[in-house]
Amino acid sequence: MTNALNISFIGAGNVATHLARHLFPLGHNIKGIYSRTLENAQRLAEQVNTIGVSQLDQLPNADIYFFTVPDSVLPSIITQFASVRTEGIWVH
Picture 1 (cartoon, rainbow, N blue to C red):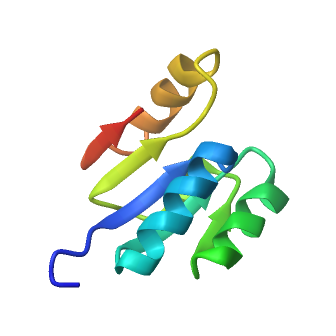
Picture 2 (tube, rainbow, N blue to C red):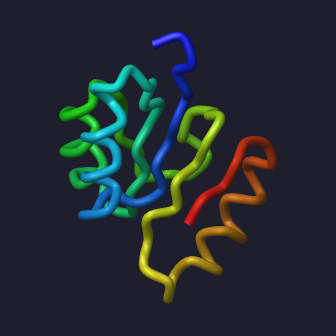
């Protein structure tokens, strides 16, 4: 794919799983998956050939960051993420 995007996910639940598993075979580069629970991040990461992390500062740089976390934790996660990243497109 000539227009492949570098994508990272903040969250490893159903939404992240469906998006990552759809975007990966289209040739997009899934750079990393973050979850508060390392095992959840790694489980999804294995499916899309990337790394799973449980610390936001360990998430690789990307063109697009998908925030696939519950609305109730979104403000807290965005605040934390903004302290380690400012680039890229952030999507929720």
